[in-house]
Length: 136
Image (cartoon, rainbow, N blue to C red; front, top):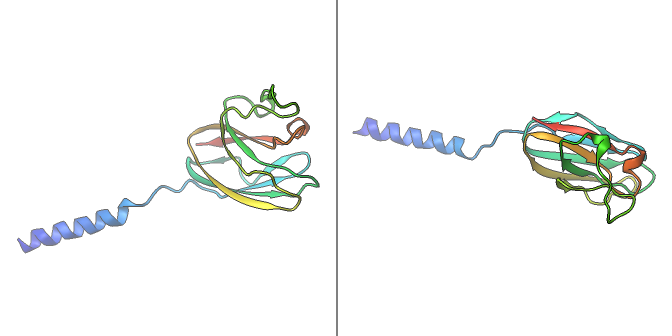
């Protein structure tokens, strides 16, 4: 009986130790926003909680928007209500506005699929501020 109790106790302790863990997604993803592009430290990541570490090295305000889509990075449709901006359909989250030299981290829970990372300040997408990103 004591042996059985000891085995049950050991099993419960083992389960408790494993229960709260989640798989690591990878990252963090380093993102540099310039005035004419979006540079990534890596172009793909495993699904799960992913932290984006975004820095604006440009000379004007930027932002980073993460969109889940099967559309190519350079084929996002324009926003019909906001001239100069692109549709944010499928948006998973964003950094918010980043002043010149500002950095910001934000974390999203990502599922497998294709994404586009872009700056959606008016006109910025059109000058090349977008890049493809894959969640595996």
